[in-house]
Image 1: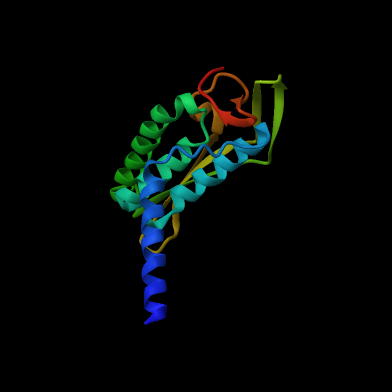
Image 2: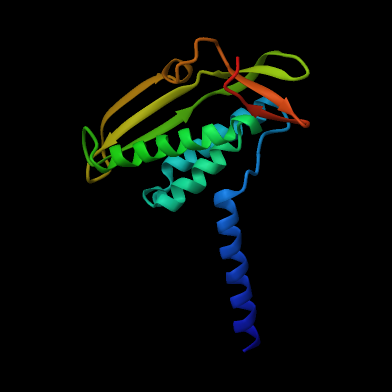
Length: 175
């Protein structure tokens, strides 16, 4: 009986944490400009590969997490944009243009700061590439397309802007 009570308490705590994750403005950021960019790209890849992404709750959790890499003043807008992007990815993947499903992966060699001061930096994603693979029902690649990461996301400059807020670095739309 004692174990049942402990498990019930743990489940209540976990379910409470899940609800908080959906609404909490956690602000992951990074300790260096490069760290925030690398962590964001890693989480972005993980989100797009998440088998639970078909579920609205999973998309909302991922949208919140991805938006938390952005400056606090930009998170609400980024949360909506990330939600729309993830919804579009799932909807497109339900009926891909080719094959049974598509996968999107971002790869790069490394990151490096191109320019920085105390509050802002521009981070280059060296050899950043977005790869889209369309797969058939047997998981064979039937078509693959690659493109330069920054060009595909519409960045005119050679890097991603980051800003320092309260001692942590965050992605920003500015710059």
